[in-house]
Image (tube, rainbow over all chains, first blue to last red; front, side):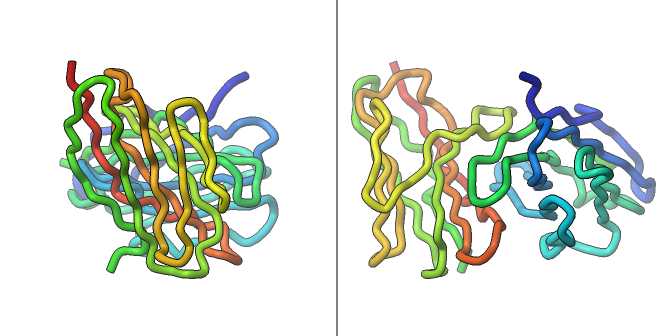
Length: 113
Length: 110
């Protein structure tokens, strides 16, 4: 079956512009996570959605970052007024919920010039 | 102190060698643990869950030591294809937040 997909795969933007990153989770997965991975670093938790519950936004680094999950499926991560330090790979993962395995998408590589 | 810490390596080992990685976690309330594998410029993929009693999957063995707050991964008979970064993950009790370590890089040499 189809795995987690993310788009775009690469995004180059200028400092100060807004960007939207999209994640399509595996069908039926109720849990959806966003992470950020900078070069040579581990995964930094950003936000977690579980079903219709309020998302856990505790990992968002600033108010320039926001995310939505519409209809319990597709999610969009928005970064406003991008900064050079936002350059990283943004990974989305979905899972069946609980403390089970997560399945990762291929990521979006964001470069802010 | 980071919540989950790993030796970044790299661990350079010859083919056929046995290699072990440890990962320490700071919060004693951590409840669930995993090992993920990440190849260069690829997404992480689950290698194995870590059970309290320890578990084995082929050449891979995972152990949990709650008293000392660490998990370990043992790889026997290393293959060239085992070269990757190995990420350990802990989940705090009462949460669904997966805390990843920064990873341990393994290079298996011919």
